[in-house]
Amino acid sequence: MDDPFDRDGNLTETGRTVMETDDYIFTLGEAEDGDADAQYQMGLWHLDGGNIMVSEDREEAEQWLAKAAEQGHAEAMYRLGRLREEGKI
Image (cartoon, rainbow, N blue to C red; front, side, top):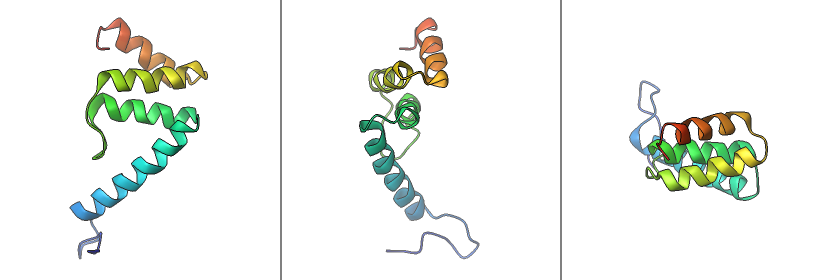
């Protein structure tokens, strides 16, 4: 694999892709196992396509946020409520 950092110590595109892929795989596993923080993160990623592995998908975002909210995740409850109130999901 190419060096994930350039000579100035900045993350290369290859490095970013590898890190985001690993982060996605780990977070998805945690979310599927019921971790509310991971479910919230998955919801955020699906809101804006914030990870190279995730496309923007409002329905998927709502499902992940709802799972986190059902477990009492305060930020997920707030975000889900706001998005519904604003008609964004």
